[in-house]
Length: 61
Image (cartoon, rainbow, N blue to C red; front, side, top):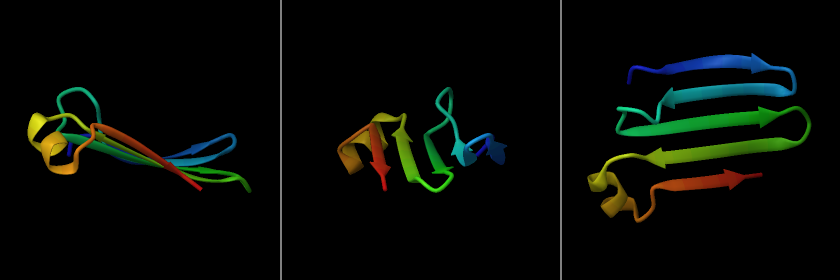
């Protein structure tokens, strides 16, 4: 994947693999200080959307 990386933010951190423009998929894991996590899955090709049945899924704890 072309885009990946770890970034520290004011209220937590973010780890990102992939992207939304020109990439097959994107996965973002976000941590909010003392509040929880959010996992964001993006599928950008018809093949992956047909396999998994969705193009975007947000899972939060």
